[in-house]
Length: 117
Image (tube, rainbow, N blue to C red; front, side, top):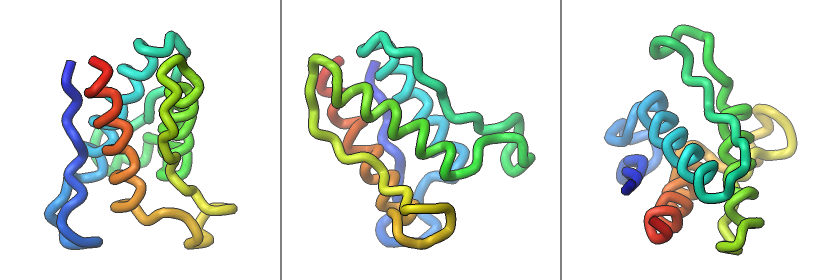
């Protein structure tokens, strides 16, 4: 199963990349594939029922779930040294990765997983 990369656009905020919902749908496929490879029971990102319905995970929680999946892959027999998403020290402190940087790191993990399959 080949995973599709998240379109992060050409530059920050250029509105040419994937919508957040689409990006997290792709991230969930990645988490499910890592779950299969590592046999670790991983949580997927709750994207809600409809876009912007307020029922899904917030961004910090979503990327925490992705980081857990990256940890699982890093500690598996594959022993990749994949870089996790920098969430900052606390919510909204602007010290972590911006969305484009975060999804670029997710894409690096997608590339590794695609190489395994």
